[in-house]
Length: 102
Image (tube, rainbow, N blue to C red):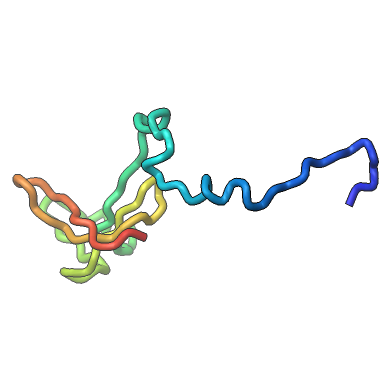
C-alpha cells in the first residue's frame, strides 16, 4: 500500500453498478461491432496421417476421421469453441443445427 498523501483514491460504492452488470446483451448498443468480420469454423473431425500417406492422396481418396457418425460437430468462432451441433442438409448445402452452446 502506498502511504503518499498526495495520492487519493475515490470511495468505491460496491452496490452502485450491480444493476448495470446484470443487463442483457440486447440492452447494450452492439451497432459498432455488428459489421466486424469473424472466422466461423465447423469441425467435422480430425485425423493424423504420415507424410507418405498425404503424398498418396488423390481425387476420390477417403479420409477416415476420428469422429463417429452422430457425434456433434464443434463450432468455433475465431478458434474458440462456442457451440456444438449436428450436420444437416439444407437446399443441397451443409449446415449445422446447434444443440449446445458452450
